Length: 310
Ligand SMILES: Nc1ncnc2c1ncn2[C@@H]1O[C@H](COP(=O)(O)OP(=O)(O)OP(=O)(O)O)[C@@H](O)[C@H]1O
Ligand SMILES: [Mg+2]
Image (cartoon, rainbow, N blue to C red; front, side, top):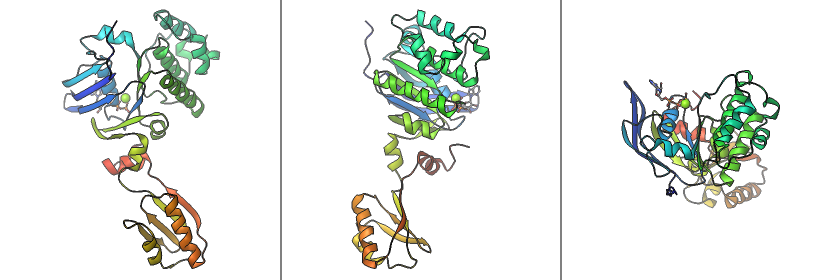
C-alpha cells in the first residue's frame, strides 16, 4: 500500500519564471485532508502555474512540492493515479459523446462513481449523447469536472471550475464539491470569484503576482484589518458623548453625514443594545440600522490597492 501522507499538499518556497515574468514567487502553503482549499487571485496571479506544478505538468525553478507525500514530477505516475485533475479550458476528444467520454474515464478506475449519477448531478443527462465539440462551454466544463472526479481520487485539483457558467450550473458544481468534502476528498480549487471562495472554501490563500498576500478561513480574512461597522439613521446633530461613554473604550461613534451615524468596533448584541438604549434615552428612533462586515473584496483591495475583478 502507498503510504498516506498526513498533508496531501505541501509547498515550500515554490517559484516559477517564464523569461522575465515571475509567475510564482516563493509560495508556501499546506492543504489538509478533506478540506476545500481555494487559491484566490486576479487574472495572471499565478493560479494555473501553481496547480500545474502540483499536478506535475510543470517543474518549479526552486522550492519543493509534496503531493500525497510524493514528488509530483519524479513520482508522476504514482501521483497521477491518485489525483483528479480538471484543467482550465478542458482538454478532450472533440468527436466523443459526453456519456462515452465519462464511461471511458470511469473504466480506468478500480472503484468509480456511477457515471449516470454523476451526469445527473451535474445536469448533463440530456447532453450525454452530444459530442464534446457541440456541448456549450458550461457543459464542457461540467463534463471535465465529472471526468476529474469519477475515479474517486483522494485529491482533486480544479482550475476555475465554474468559469463561464450560469448561476444554475454553478450551484450544481458547488453542491458536487461540497459532496466531495463530505466524502473525505481533498479539493484544491482556483478562482477569481470572491463569492465562490466565500461559499466553498474552508481555507483561502489570496495570491497576487505569484505571492501569497493573505490566508485564512473566509471568516478570518473578512475579520482581519478594519473592524465591523454599525450604521444607522437618526435625527441630525445628536449628542454622541453619552454613547461613547457607554461603549467599550476603543469604540468610535461619529455622525458621518447629517443624520447618518457610524459606530466602529466589534459589533455584538451588547453593542446593539447600548446604541438602542442611548436612542431611547434621547427619545429618538434609529432607522436603517445595519451591521456591515467586510467582504473578501475589501480585504483584497486593502492588501494590494487593486480591485480583484480588474
Ligand atoms: N507558458 C507561459 N509562457 C510565458 N508566460 C506565461 C506562461 N504561462 C503563464 N505565464 C505568465 O505567468 C503569469 C501567471 O499566469 P497563470 O496562468 O498562472 O495565472 P492565473 O492566475 O491562472 O490567471 P487566470 O486567472 O487568467 O487563469 C502571467 O503573467 C502569465 O502571463
Ligand atoms: Mg489560470
